[in-house]
Amino acid sequence: MLRSMYSGISGMKNMQIKLDVIGNNIANVNTFGFKKGRITFKDAMYQTIGSASGGTATRGGINAKQVGLGSEIASIDTIHTESSMQNTSRTLDLAITNGDGYFVVNDGGQDYFTRAGNFYIDETGLLVNSDGFRVQGFNPETNVRGDITIPKQIDEGGNSVGLQSISISQTGEIIAQYENGTVNTISNIALARFSNAEGLDKAGGNLYQSSPNSGDPQFGIGGGSYGTVVSGKLEMSNVDLSEEFTEMIVAQRGFQANSRIITTSDEILQELVNLKR
Figure 1 (cartoon, helix red, strand yellow):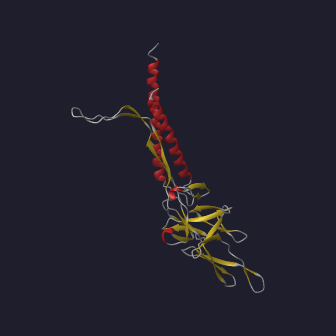
Figure 2 (spheres, one colour):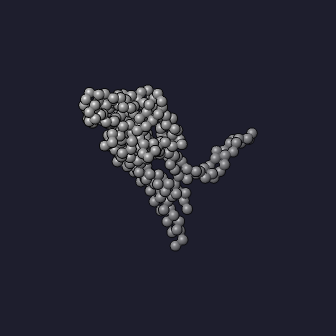
Figure 3 (cartoon, one colour):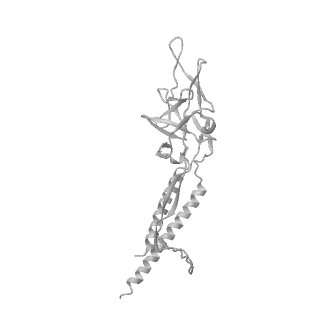
């Protein structure tokens, strides 16, 4: 059979996967904290018809004669570039700017990492994300992490005092003010950095998990290379629709061209079959 037919098949499969990646990017164009994917390709193995040979005193060298056998996926990358911020004016909506840190949430002892900072306070006072995962705090003096709880304030008469307001500093320090005027510093929001953020595994739900190639998380608080914590804003998706639609056209034409290779190869095979009539 013709090698070109199998090369065309490999190209069509790769263009299909490229469209899958593009489709996922476009579907998450309005997902807070989403980082777009990118696919790259490489040429596949080669069949050597003639080997290379070096020159001699009487004759020059000869280059190798090789026929390629199609393409294959080189990588599917996650592009962790920082995106623009959307103003929400909600105190517990947090974004990280000018840094490569991630918020840390925990579910049943398993740490996850996210750039989506839409957090909430549950009925027990725990700071959680939209799935109920517990947002982690960090003490930079003791290097201890733990859940963040907004405690209830009790007055001298034993009555519960309502929470009046919460403020969050650029380092992630949470300060709670109660109706009786009491002000308490609760905790610092934990941030995590990785030596290779592109090595993180996507876990769904705006979450990432560490992998052997991402390295272990380095925990800290806002500031420096971790980035600045901004209250009242959320980081938007870094998907550029104009770029995605352009890549979609490229993938569509690539698929069309590879299908044409298969059609042409089929026509040649048909001519060979028709030689004996």
